[in-house]
Length: 204
Image (cartoon, rainbow, N blue to C red):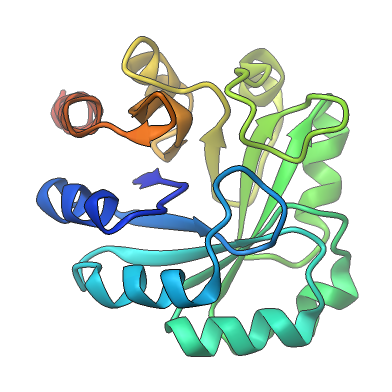
């Protein structure tokens, strides 16, 4: 599966509707470079092709806010990037899928993430003081050698230059900044990465 994150403009959605990634993501907690307000998120959500699943990305957001926004936007996935614990994740039961981002420094970080009761992990790079979206590649050696029982996405610094290598590690990839030019989603970059993804997926 391929997820393209950080949707902010109606033009972004028109591009992904053309190339149909499996998931699109919107940053719904305030204070980040790609954050969108709820009115914009609703507009983007309504424009998104029904074949693309919608992911709302939250960072230490009050659980009641997450529930309200998930319902308003008809989210398919809640993606958590903060310090959310098992009790927090359990409070979201029955709403939609819940994914938890893990900033990987060691295999133990991944195993702790698995214990939180989420549906899927998103394994990202560790950058001190950042919760994601850094464009830095995760330590793939740690991820390759870990004994991971939950399904997961590989995130962090994945683009057309290394998506084929990433797919050797995990069939699920998450991209954002690498498909932008000057901070704006770039149709040609999205075309190329989705083509590389599908070609790699179809190899025997």
